[in-house]
Amino acid sequence: MKITYREENGYLIPDVALPKQKEIGAWGLQHLGYLKRFRRARYTELLTSGELNKYLYKVNEEAQERFESLVADFAEKYGLTEELKAKDQMKWVALANYIAKSAQEIVQSELIFR
Image (cartoon, rainbow, N blue to C red; front, side, top):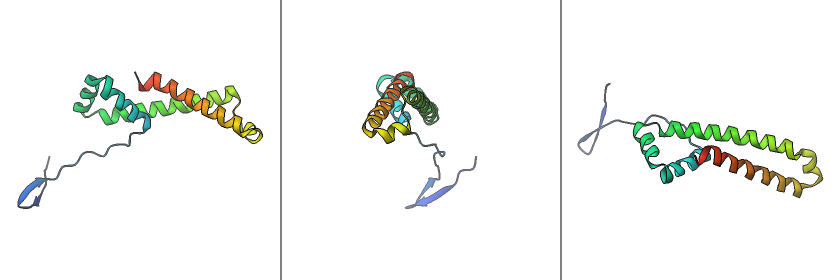
């Protein structure tokens, strides 16, 4: 491994950079908060091994897929359609919010706060 240096104020500073990491989404950030607060040992293990970002990205992807699947299933089950949206917008919005909140709670209990 070849290390390069740059000079700053008469000192040689090694050119080091962290590897490019993927962006963690909202679900991953929620799980990170949970790990820091309630699963301290797991958080420390992932952090020191350098696997934390990859783990949180994976949790975020799984949670997003589960959320989208639940929303689609609930929308079909409860009749959330464009026809309803055109007919009664207030009912459509209330139903859409209910479905999103229900799906969010399920994802949080199954994947985020575990």
